[in-house]
Length: 195
Ligand code: 6PG
Image 1 (cartoon, helix red, strand yellow):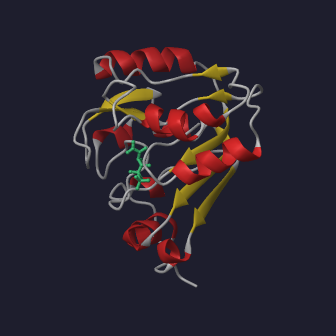
Image 2: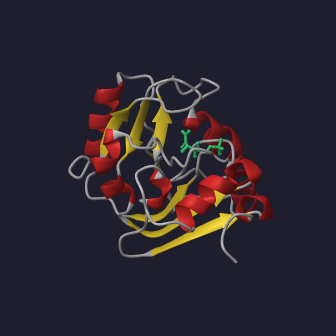
């Protein structure tokens, strides 16, 4: 499961270089901005440019969230598509406010326990509506990786991994239920974590 945002761009490029055959992979997304797939703010577009376009053999399946649909409809369709899927790997980013996927601080989406995918209001730029996986969907994975770089993420990283879990920092609430959760950070993003 791929994340949006700019941080994973280089990781996607390297992943395509290191392994150009993705025929055994099914791709999903954790969230999408409600824009068409070719839009500069589309999470699908970033993954297409940085990862999919660089592959020699395409993934077995590419499950794109329909950002061009009305958000509630896109959420319902993606939930149906998702079914009982358990992810091998969930990749998450963190926003400077501590959000992950499109689960924003203190948003009602954090309390969702039944739905796997919901429509969400924008909490940060770009200010467009979102479709996001919920905590029950994200946690259904064998491994979860958070990727964060730069000092503008240092406070959010500390709150997500150094402080007690809180709805003020959604990334602190999202963990693999039965597998591993790992934070991959550069020096700058890790500066406020206890040593
Ligand atoms: C989105 C994301 C979001 C992202 C963080 C970090 O669609 O906005 O999925 O959760 O991962 O905002 O974004 P950057 O990597 O651009 O800092």
